[in-house]
Structure formats: structure tokens, C-alpha cells
Length: 459
Image (cartoon, rainbow, N blue to C red; front, side):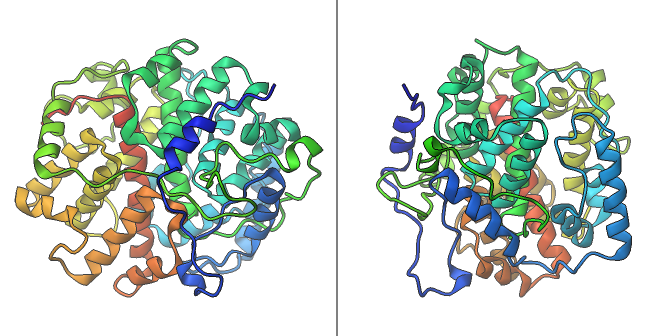
């Protein structure tokens, strides 16, 4: 008997929301991607994503890039657990290298990927979680990469198909993580103690933290590749045979209208209206008193993962203590979060406003408190900070366009259109536009990580 774990959840989540779909003759710049409802349609969509037109310039690879890609492929074949990736041109990485300030990107663009001995969750299983995140966000680029990784790890086609439509084939522990992953992706604002406690029936606390770190980072990656319409690499193969039982089985993961058939329009995530200023201030005060859901490392461990030039005074922040549980993986992520505040081409004020807008849309109170402190330190009053909650707040057109894009990326990256990105490019260089998107991705990751862990706000 097929287990429909998400049927009730999906119906309740999307029933009251209008599908996002325009007339067939609407300009392409105004039309978000449709969602594949079945396994067969998904494969066709993945194949079609090779023709995607990137929203920032992505020139053909140079001879040097081709040689480097060939060398990576040879090295990957000799490395266990490469999951079929590592060879050939990777458009995601190329677009980052072309447009993102190396000082901002830091180790995110390469560097050591030495395994963290404290991390114990199976890598193939984490790829399954990434697959679910990408399906939920309708991110065809990341979806395709996870398909390749899973196949490279020896996961059978029917098992991948079951990830989408029939979770009865998986263990109770796997299903619990799948449900948690989908909720953290769609509704980070609705996560509760009970959601984490349900994982504790199957996983240790540090494994739960590893899952949260993985899913949070996956959501960030989707918000880079999807909104920028990065094309899938042409050498990947997606049109493989599909078992008859899965050909017409509708997805339990994707944001589908339950009453529609075929390729359908997306059902956006429901976050509701933004809270009033009074409600936000109460939420921030409550965050200052809460007890974290997961263990924190001591101050010395936290400082060991922070960059050497970290300028914060006093005890290490709770987010660093959370990452201090993982000496290598935590250090890489802490470095990325620290660079967001201090590196790059955009002004510190705009960077902090992006963090505020992302945290407000995600209802990530710990992250919001940090963004507010940054803005206050830069000279903005509380009135000026809360004015950012209004789409038509008094601000230069360039900033309004950037923050409008950030809002859309945060709530539903699949709904970003050519026109949204072009509105930012009218005011900013391509590298600055890429940085706006990149900062939104890092905010989405930080929001989910810190709120799922229930960190206590320090200020």
C-alpha cells in the first residue's frame, strides 16, 4: 500500500494559494518556470534545462577551463564517494568565478574539502535530501546534479523516482528526515520543537545539526542557480527509462496544485502578511530568552572555527558556537558567513538590508536581531530599519530593485523572472547583481540554520 505521507500536508499548505501562472502569450520575462508533476515530466524538464538562458553573462569555457575540468574529472574517478560529479564543465561554479568577488567567495569557491570526522550522516543520504530540497524549490539545475550524484553512487532509478512519489520504500528514519527537509525548505517560519524532537527518535543531536546544515545550505544553493537560470551542462544524461509504476505518479514533494494535471504552475510558499513592528519586537524579545534546541560548543571551540580576522568582541556568537561542533565543516561555513558581512563590492548598509529583508520573510528571529544590530551600528534608526518592511519604502530606485529581488528569492526562488534580474542590472554591474543574489542565498542558509537550532539572540 502506497504511503502518502505528504498528501494532507501538501493540500493544507497550498489549498488557499493561487497558482502562479500567466497566459500562454505572456512575455518570457514575466513567466516563471512551470513544475513537472511526474517523474517522466521531470526528466523532460531537466533535459530542457540545458537550453536555459542565463540571466547573467556566461561565456563559453576557455581552453584553460576545459583542461582544468578534464583534470578534475580524472581526479574524481580516483576519489571514493565522488558521486559521479567532478568531471566536465560546471556552469554553477563558472558563473560564481566570473562574477563574484574572490574575497567574498573565499573557500566557497574551492579550497579544502577535507571530510569532517565529527560528521556521520551518510553522503548519499544527504544527496537525497538535496534532491528533495531542489524538487521543492523547482530548481532544475540543482535537481539535475543530484540525479547525477545519486546515480553515480549506485542509487537505482526506481529509488530516485520513489523519492518523489512513494516514500513507503524508505526507512522510518529516512522518511522522518524527508518530512523535516521539506518543511525546513518551504516553511522555516513554522518549524517547532516538536519537529526537531521527531528527528531525535532516529538521530543523535549532532546528526540532526548536520542535517539542518545540509538542508540550509541546499536552500542557499537553489537560490543561486534557479534565479540566475543557470543552464544545465549538456553532457549530462536525463532521458533514461522510467518504470511504468512511476511514469504517472504525481510528486509529493514539488509545489503542485493538487487539482491540476500535467506541467502545472507553481503554488508559492505561504508565509502570510508580515507581522507588525510590535509583534516583531515581541518575537525578538522572546528569542533573547529561548533555550537552543541543539548543543553549542564552548567559546574556545567556537573561536577555532571563526576567521583569524574576526572582529567581534566578547564571547563568540551563538551561531559560531553551533558551528564549533564541527571543526572542519563548521569552519568552512563560519568563514562564508563572516565574509558576507565584510567582503564584496556592495556597501555595508545594503548588505545589512539584504540580511534584514531575508530574515523578515523567513521569520528568522535570531538572524533578524543580528541584521538589526548591524543596521543600527551603521547609523540607521529603528524607524528606518522597520521601514524596510514596506515594498515602497523611501529609498533610491536601485536599492528598491535589489531588495525586491531579495524578497522574491527568499520566499520562492522559482518565481524569479528575467524581468526581476534585469530591474537590478539597470542600476548595478553584473558583479554587483550577482552579489545581491549571493547575499540572498547566504541569508536563506543562515536563517534556516539559526532558526531551526532555536539559537538565543545575544543582543
